Length: 270
Image (spheres, rainbow, N blue to C red):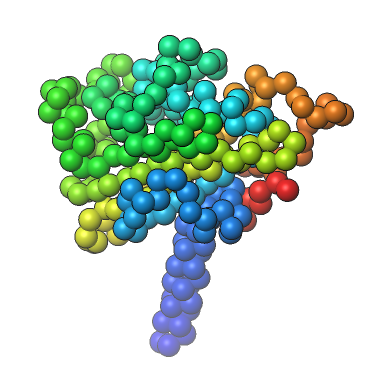
């Protein structure tokens, strides 16, 4: 009788370790330990956040080429460069849209027709920090009449909206930072960091948070690759030999289409 119990306990321990390892991987996709532990603009906005997600990617282009793609993000604007069926009507733009190049603190980058993230910090060419909390969601809903998203517009967006309305915790706060760091050779490190506070733990929240974290990872990964590809398609090479820079991220582009596999964290380029 003891053998099945010991076997079951061993399997449970291995399974738990695998889940913890996977969560650590998708929480720090594309970054080295120094970046994961570093302080970035916006960290003080939700300083008590228990959720910390830091992701990074290297882009063959200087920060000034990346910045225009960030400031025009948003539903009804240039899109979020991710899975458009889930967060857009139509496709995310493949061009710089000059009508959306002005952004200021207090503006809203929409995630749906009734609201979205509030802009908390604008440091042109370096950092853009967005913010959302439960009070802001309520204010936006009251101001717009909270018109529901129609499934006839896009089934994916409608499903995402209903999921967030029913599954979001009653008290939460999230900051989302986009940070651009220049590197050698005219390249840029794009670092995205999310800090979140989601109220007291419950049985439901403990089960829900890993699923939400993974869903956010899938969308953010697609977004970062989308930003990188758009920049690189429109940025002239600055290398004298005109050969592409080897990219660890690019080698793994085809590994995850909609879900991630158990791979080691990506290392940043030298």
